[in-house]
Image (cartoon, rainbow, N blue to C red; front, side, top):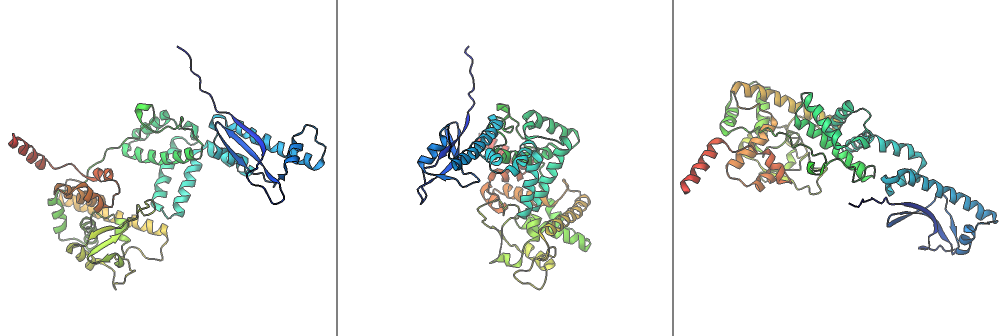
Amino acid sequence: MAKTYSIRKQVNVNIILDKRSQKCDGTYPVKLIVYYGQTNKRYSFDRNISLIDSDFEKMLAPRLKQKELLEIKTYLEAEKARAQKYADQLGEEFTYELFEALYKDRQIVRAARTQKQKIYTLFEEHIANLNVADAIGSASAYSTAMRSFQTFAPNLAIKDITPQFLYKYEKWVTDSGRSITTAAIYLRALRTIVNIAKDRGLITHTNYPFGAASKKKYEIPEGRNIKKALVKEEIQKIRDTEDLTDEARYARDMWLFSFYCNGMNMADIYRLRYENIADGFIHFVRTKTQRTQKDKTPVEVYLCDPARDIIERWGVKPVTPRQYIFPVLNDLMTSEDKFRITHNATRSVNQYMETLSRRLGLSVKVTTYTARHSYATLLKNMGTSIEEIAENLGHSNITTTKSYLASFPQEHKKETAEKLVALL
């Protein structure tokens, strides 16, 4: 069997007279040109050098006596040698973007190489960008993921992120008592950062570690989606419970408001203003997606009577368009303040609901997520289409909606089986 050899693309550097644009004085700019495979790219020098045809030809001559041209030639040859050196250093990892980082600005050579070596530089940059965009929750999630990887591999280099490394990390997370879902969340964050590295030419397509396991890549586990839906009788118990303190009643009502309003996330509930209500509907853009989706079509929620009663009971007065409906946030707070206070308020609701679920002997530990899952699952059991449920939840992808839906109850499955038998 004949051996096969992979041919590495060569990188060659040269000096040219760029005749695409002639200046008023008849000269052409002198540029550096880099050839890579079948492609090439031209670069200007820090010094603005332009020559006419004859002077450029003289400069290339071996015995150059003209002092001015000799000085230019010396400079250009030094630049060419420097550029070729960087191209040779990059070798198989050569990309124009990384070459530019090294060649165009000597001050960032060290930073570029550090970035090429350490994944945490890119992590920190991404987190900083999220904070600038007021995506405080996402920034916090990436920070948590980064800390996990730093604990496992403090000096992790990009080249070390292989499928084998990722499998070892997954095992380390689960062996420490955390769930496979937690590992998957952190690994998805790392994949985003590795994708940034790939876009910048810091990792090659061949060395990219994520993908299908069948192709010897690392495939992020789906995780075990624990269904959190309540049946209608349990929701009725929550609704009809009396003998609650004011704090517990407020928490219960916030949970019910989420359920009545299409499983609205608590962060969105706390950001609702009276101006979001029009013609009997609430219109809002989800906080979770407003910075990531180009199409920011508002979610439309019918304001049913029980939800109206909750607003009447707990809503801030007097009613003005720009006033937040519920007394949690205000316009003097920073984005960081709003994130922290929303988190604390949601945790408080969860604590009261956990206590109430134990008191009522419910089948699951009730949290604010349970309201959203229960809303979606009850609609499914009523025969509502997945497409409508997805729109009501504010999902742009039906696959996301399916992950929210608990299985049909056993009684429903029994009825379906009996109907099938009756057809035979």
